[in-house]
Image (cartoon, rainbow, N blue to C red; front, side, top):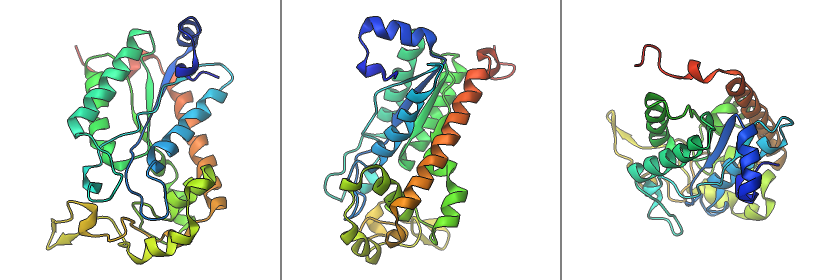
Length: 256
């Protein structure tokens, strides 16, 4: 196992020397309606990221999870923590830069929260342009979207059937099935609110009374297992691709 935080500095030297790819889980601590724990997003990211420790060649090192993200739009719901978009971007950028100083200059950011996406995109571009590291973000829900379409009848978006199923599989004790109906009764069918082409749903509370978006009553732990296995396999394939890709081929073409 190569969880960096569990290594001594001597052990870390060996782990980092053999590692080709750093795996950084990022998520959030924010409301997920009345049925799911606040840690849904970072717990999901961490679970996917930790599957990389099972790789036989020791070619991936898993970094500590970043559990607070860009979640200001959930601020009216109790328990939500958040940092600014720029603070999050800088934190992730500097974390990956520090890993690059140890010689691991390819990374996957395993992301569990959609609100982090813009900042992670800028981070990836900055690190690449500066030839510090190549670190594409990987959103687990994008990796399983075809399967989710087959499993659930919802547009979804937050604390929906897909998220509820995944957390139910990963951490049964952190899901309250008796509250899924209440979550759905106060949910919106899709993310956001539009008036004549203008987005007026700045905060989640503008369009969802329960904080959920989608149809969480369709959640099922067996479906969550299918989602996890599919996402795990897609992440492993991405890490394989990064391991095989020469660093010189990761930089911008024509960049000087």
